[in-house]
Length: 348
Image (cartoon, rainbow, N blue to C red; front, side, top):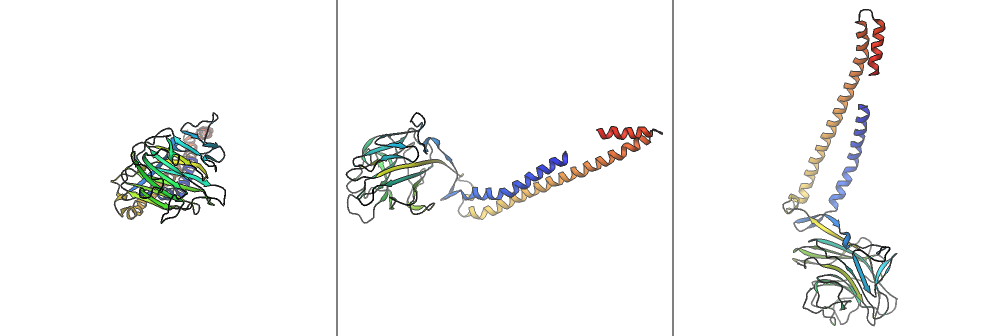
């Protein structure tokens, strides 16, 4: 039984040894370097994530509200507006985001009938207030917080192309300049033809408190993220609500939210050696080598213990078998006793 147990443990150890390198590599590859620190891991926030079928059996969602012209197709999307003039719809989280650092990935779709003008666009909100319908892509003007506009129609002439992604930080007093498409009010922007694409269109917002705001977009190819804008030393409001809204005027489009995934980002400690400029890459091989040497030492030590147990067990059986016969012989002519003694010892 001892030998069988050792074999089982040895097999499990070898299996763990064979799969562990891949797991370690994958974990290290998931880390995101941010200046002199690292996003060590992310934890999904269920309260701010949304996936099909979007609603429960009571046609409600525990964490989200939607309204105005928005409706839910449980197999596809939450449609904020249809390709119909004068539509407005919204989708808002019921709770604020309390995480200091977070990553929000939004899969969306803007589409409509080909061959005609389209507009106006949609917006992603991280603001102090929620569900305040108004003229700015379906939400209130003079907002406080961050808005990222996905603008598909140019209201005036610009040196850049549309569709366009633009970020604006509102102070609660400044109006959005609709006539000039917010020109001069942006914290960052980029032109990206995210309408009528052949791949899933996604926007990724990464925010680290008082450090930076980074926005990337996927619209050219699957898993190809294009840098849109990055702003250093940004401070957003604490505990913002996450929302989406869209608006159509005389021009229209379908504006759909397909999925929302929000993560709380956990940063590595500032004192971590790997985060001290350049030592991250130079130190990893040494640490990994030390850990592997320790693992091999423990494995060999375990094999040695098993081998010792095996030989000890064999010696025990040998002595038990022959020692029992001699004990019977030493009984002074009790040959039968020797046989009996052997049988007795074999039973135990």
